[in-house]
Length: 334
Image 1 (cartoon, rainbow, N blue to C red):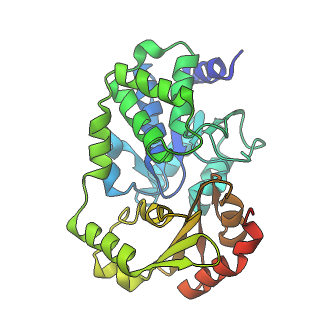
Image 2 (cartoon, one colour):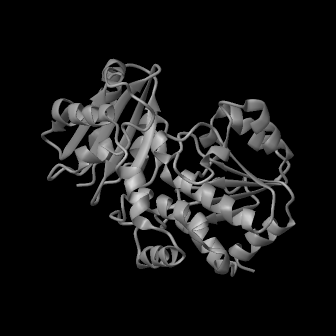
């Protein structure tokens, strides 16, 4: 029996299904969650999506995204859904602590059957009953498509299911430019478009909804806050809490900003340091032979993909930057 059929059989047997994803939702966590949600709804099953925190505004257009139960906002209700589930999905994260310490308790104590669908390295296979993991695939949303196709249910695919999946694939592959994009990825996109997905509308919703404050913040960051380490092809941007507040920062306003630093000619590693609520959040990006997931794990209690990772630092912004700069040589591939 294939893993696709195994997962489909579990869905068919379940009465109360809950889909979870990681903290600080992005396009792929929203896309895979809502794509699977819509698919399970079409099967006539009871399903809820529970996320640790709310998605940034540029993702609020996704159909039914407001049906996601947010643990940080309604802890009791979210906990009841997880506790009462007989089937739990973990999408786009490889270990239960990625949902945050409070919500993790309910995942850990749940008696439900547990399925992980993910593309990050080193999944916690001990925790899950079924593991569908492919670290060579560019997004979890692409894996959800493969699940639907693999269990013989492509006849159910429509724009309602396909649009969030396209979103997840597009955002987690950097608009299809990362090395993880394969011929199969483009074949998947073609099938989604044939099912009615309007690809241009997804791009417009994600990239053409800037506020004036967000554009001013990006302009300030790229003109005043980019630093280049001249003995290595490395660049970084740092933003203090005061600087973010000056531009009326809202969650998601710095999305993709690190890629501006990476886009500088010759740069191979880029970082974004942003100070918010007493914590320094770090985004790391790379290309070529350079990988950043181990750096994120070792230095900033984080992780992610080879070329796109992140983490956090408890301390001053200057200390976080010093840790990054002083340890670069350990992770540099000559």
